[in-house]
Image (tube, rainbow, N blue to C red; front, top):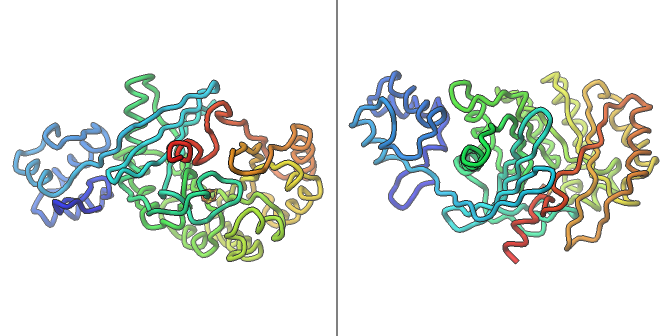
Length: 352
Ligand code: SF4
């Protein structure tokens, strides 16, 4: 994003970009490295606070770049420690970021767009059309702001990143890929690629593109239904990329990367949660059983949308069917049911 002053956000630059800019400005690689470390190791938010940099370089940085403004408006904390952050961006748009507590650490769920055009029928975010894509810098700023909050309040580090918040990441592809590069950089935030997951609603051509990226982040597919009829009722995107096309892309992705793929499946009462649907899901996953990992997620009801959460018995029967047929599957714990935990609910409530 270029400000009126002509400056650009420093968080839009990868380490390679910083080195290129430095080279063109006559700054040595020694100092380029220091700029990067100041940003992502020392976490400076003011160039005058940089360590070990010459004054003329600081001046040039101040003339060229700015730090994103992202204001924390509200924090909600659930009894299970899930936290939801509502932020206001420089253009007064609002976004949500969620922090989840797991046995293995803390994972942050990052938003990639303001609103979303995919329009899934079960999602609070889909109720508002996309206003714009987020800049890479605005995704980075979410992590830095939550980290700052944690440092001031609890002191624990973020260990995992899931790109699963508001928006379709592959509809903002280039900015998301640069974001992944920055957070994965081993001299910066150093979040390992195995700790990063990108979730898509099923933009088949982008899945093929993602298989060829240098970053080896995990892929998750928001599947939610095992046949075109049900899936098209839930997700408009299925009309553009029906299951055959989606699964052809997934098979190709696995062939190229040899990586496992997670399948997100929200359990909606008497809609997609019967043993018949479990059987259809099994048939879809049969050719890639070795690589598939199914997450069954109890639906988090959204006030404006009519669906209900499946009963525990139906979820259990679905789960057991898959396990009996050797599909790796987990029943995911619900996060933050006592706060507005479904994606986009806090923002929707705030906007209303
Ligand atoms: S589930 Fe994701 S892709 Fe679908 S409308 Fe919501 S934010 Fe968009």
